[in-house]
Image (cartoon, rainbow, N blue to C red):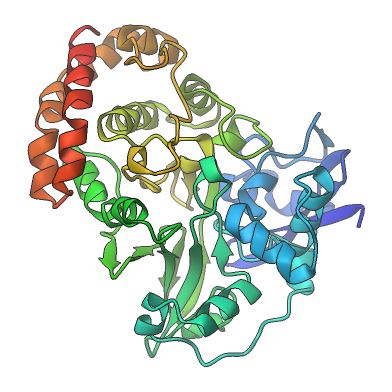
Amino acid sequence: MKEVTIAIYHNGAWHQAAQYRRNQCLTYDIDYVVRFMDENHPMARVGLDFDINFEEHSRDQWPPFFFDIIPAGAARAAWLKRQGLADSEDAETDWSLLCFAANFSPGNIRIASAVERFTLTAHPGFTREEIIERNIEFIDYAEANGAIVAGASSVQGQSPKFLLVQDLNGRWHAEGALPEENIKKHWLVKFPRHRLDADRLVLKNEAPYYEVARDFGLKVGAPLCFEADTLFIERFDRNIQGRQVVRYGLESASSICGWSGFGPGISNDQICHAMARLLKQPQPDIIEFLRRDMLNLALGNVDNHGRNTAYLKTPRETSISPLFDFAPMFMDPEGIPRAARWEAEKRMAMPDWGAVAESICCPGLAADEIRALLKPDIAKVERLPETMDKYGVDQVIIDRLTKRIGDLVLSLKDA
């Protein structure tokens, strides 16, 4: 295949929205432009930086939103194994994944050929207990039906995660396996990467980490449920209205920054600058992002790369999504380095928050205002050990973070 068709879910239906000729350019479908150009709603665009018009959108590299929807890590390995292909980690393999595996991705974009060529394996569904047990039949079914998705960047996403739906009777299926009217709820289900105690510890503490973030005042979705080394997460890019599934747009920070690839590659400053350029009211989201990274530093969530921040596109607004992939990744036995940094941040040191404020200020958000907004958070950071204890974070993690939290407090006081 030399060309793919990009389908977008908008206004309650799927539309053939655009074509991409390999290594050349992206163009919106003429009928699609006629219908949606005047509105130019973020949900209707392939990406925030791709306005709906009759122009050819040429880039020196692949459109960055492609890397939000093609399988990575464990999902990539599983799909290639099913097809009997070796992973050469080159553009040819990525193109095959885009053409044939980008079918039921998060958000509201998919590749038409991937859906057309997908054959679903019929199954009555699984119980919650069978999922927790990681029943061999369940794993085989999930991989065969494209339910497995990407994981942690530092190890090319080897943490097993599955996109599942729950039917009206409470049984679990791969996304795309059920008629919409039979779906009760959409889930992301995660398991530890390995069976090491450290891997279990990281996954177990993800749920209380979200509650610490909620207490801190960050944007967090529904509470997570951890049971027997299995983490159940309700998805925020899906909603059930009546008997219809509503799909919201979801685009990563890496994509809005124009980064075509996986893993680290952009700075936190670049993310804030892209928000200032592409969002209608970026100021609250820039502050939210800044405060999230304060907690990343305080709580050791070092896997903070640009595809672990995203923007949710709904009919009402486009803004930074609820928090996700927020965990004590500093405890990971692989030894993950901090993925994204501020330009005013040296390795093994806290950022210069005053310089950060100068870098990310924008119209409607002055550097002095950013500094002032940070001041009330100092006391909250100081109380983090007590807050973590309150929500059930393991004591070994709290003990390991005490000095880090103290260093962050000192750096904030100097801002």
